Image (tube, rainbow, N blue to C red):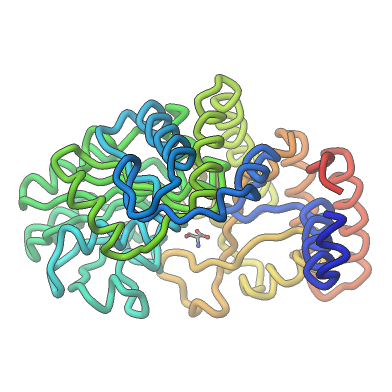
Length: 414
Ligand code: DSN
């Protein structure tokens, strides 16, 4: 980035500092990952220059032959990976993918049944500050207070009582397998559509490690940057009969020009996700999450739902006399990056929280395995047990640096 360094030293420095931060810290944020260099190359390309409103072969601008090619490649690869009938690769984000489905299929005020954010859902599943909660009548389901699993009986009761037009299935902090077939049975009883938001688990679904919603849901949305390890963006898979409505809702409904450089990067990430190595990568993500959960349990941490089937776990800190906020802050000082998170039926609010959400996609990308998860559990425990002690923080930071140096990141980037 020699040119950038000369022209805009401030932005150059911020990017370089971010690279250093990513290299020197342990990233346990469940929704993040490290996009491969080839994805970064496609995303940082001249395709950022091109306007391409419309769809391949039917654009409102000329000169689209090459961007058409990458959009078609992204569509074909997504269909191959997930087995859907129609794909729209233009949503800029997961929330915009969801918004397109809501707006294409519902009228303002229609009832929607979705998972409560406080129990693991997502803002775009009906939070009152989000478009979804403002424009639609949201009925929320949660998890069972005892086993902390989705209570399918409760979902069915709520569906029968409120007759939702759409049921949203998916979560951003739910560590267990979701039974999409059961949701289909419930939706059929009340004549509802299903929107399955697999943003978090898309990589696991692609690798066959989590059941796919594609056979059961009319609409499947995802982001492309989490377990899928592509650029930061969104995507919609839907049945053929809804293709025209979805496409029209993405453009011109809620978006203008698609980000063709990002779509090129999606195509590259989807090609990588079709390789056999991607499956072993996903298997290791889950093995690492299970190991991290077991190691923390061994150190007397309560893990929500007593474990994980996926890439993430929720740690309940209630018995440790520290809030999620303070724990995350102390860990960050020690170079371990996590996020505070509500646990189901949290006694504390979203600013403080009683929990931490930990995920393994990013560390697994660095090549870390079970042995490192054991070491990391030990480091996390040391910081949480002495969150105010600067000596512990400094000693942990030194250990983190040693570990990150053994598993280098982006060696090609300077
Ligand atoms: N905000 C993301 C997460 O962290 O789970 C979901 O969009």
